[in-house]
Length: 462
Image 1 (tube, rainbow, N blue to C red):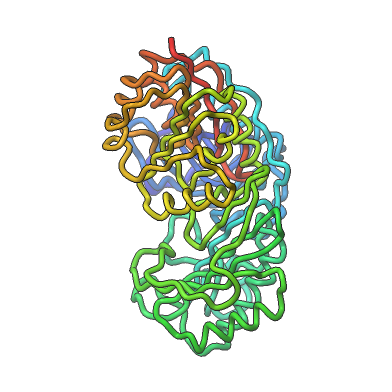
Image 2: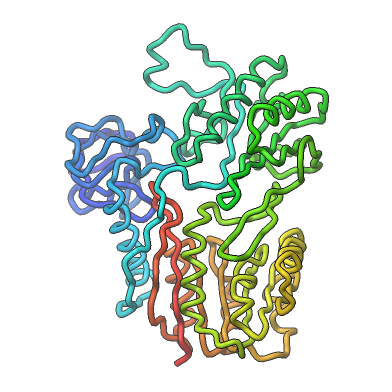
């Protein structure tokens, strides 16, 4: 079979590739198709064709795989939030472990590293403590809505269709968010429809309503509502805030972030408090944290505790060690390790995160954590003290090669590497290979129904 671009073919899905896409191999050519399960026979149109691989778009499923489940969420075949609902959870964990193992072997050339079974999430629905919904002046219609002439393509608030920046599905019930969040979302939807103000248009950049961000504290069962608008209209947003506060006593913070930035990201230029505090409180283990509207916090609180417990286990601190935490964020890992170490030093490039980290340390009465602001590759060479253990928790792109060289020159006895991307983890472990042996990797599931997987790797100096 000669595969050609823009042609459609009947293909059998034989595997899942990293990134969560189905894999077919007609005459040995890998073809990647989204929303497929191994065992499916599908009809797909080729959208991209290269010499050694191709991509296809699913048109319809000819024969369903025996592995295919009915997703709990009515949007799971259209929205990009959690595409793997059609796979049983145990099978999801098997594929996630395999993706970590294959990344180590194929990208890092590390064939003897022990990859343990994935530690599952306690909850596989209603687990996310943060959700962000986009407003659209013209929502994307689902197939069954297209058949109903009475349904108008008007305002919608929800999640984006994968691969698009301007197509938003009007989400009535998101299953990975605690249910009260759906009631808040519905109240906001109704208010916006009656407000007389347009939703922001992602092509013309006109309109008022932009995003709704909801945060939930698992420890205290409280909520933050952040209403993001293009311009300031306190008379309007205050009415919405008053309505939400009256209906939902669990809401402890309502904010209005204002931004006229053309990017589809809800970073504010001005923040106005409408109700309650400018933050909510959360706990990880025995430690309390203030979470503001734009501060980073792991989105699955209970799995985050499992992740940090594994970091503690691998670090094996006795109270005498000086620990370095690269990419220290809002200080959650240093604070978690503070009672087990002599001192923990964190480096973080984002100024607001460093301010949050220092505040969180004071909040917990911790005096042996120090937080330094700046680019790691600039700050690290200036430090003169010896570090016994290094924690590395980089963004998805992994470590800068200059930072890798600095880590090798510092040469701590032990490294605990926390990763949200098996591919860059494998690449970085290979670069650290001259001086460090990757002894063990523990994957931890923070994101049920997605292909994403966190991993903690233990590296010992050779």
